Length: 116
Length: 112
Image 1 (cartoon, each protein chain N blue to C red):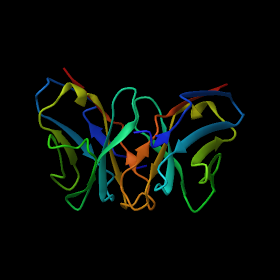
Image 2: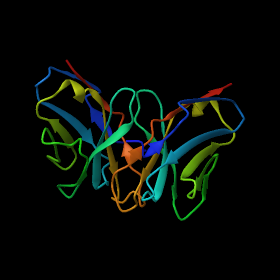
Image 3: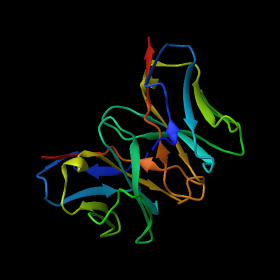
């Protein structure tokens, strides 16, 4: 079964540094998402992306965050200047269609980001 | 953000018995609900969903029930198997939106 792959599985970064988390969505999927889960808390939506544009974002997704689809297969999340509170598990997801009611979102195994 | 609540952090059942996982929501704009299962070190895996126009959806051993007036849904697993042991997340959405709003999850342990 096709799957969403995320690299690296664990990223350790010094506070204030930039970090890029990478995802390869399922190949025929057109909609891409990032979620995060701070330890002990809920999985939270960050952003959705379609046709090279952000289609929806949460209030967490401030100017420090950006997303990009640099080529036909990768989808990246960049955090410009990391803070301690950015430490979390970051999940990438993709779906064939955008509306939740049409297609479930398929998740990768996550990247654990640790900010020191 | 308490829009989706799973009040039981854990549940333990015997193999072969029924597992019932519960979820409550407060946002009446939600019209689509999903259950995801998550094993350690893996991402959430989609299990089953239900639209607000239905009150029941069944897929093999998994059945989701929706009570709109009570803003409550439940996931029934019958019969439960040890491989079902995982964290189960309830998620809700407006069908016209992209984002999922998750509950905190319930850890299900199925004992052999």
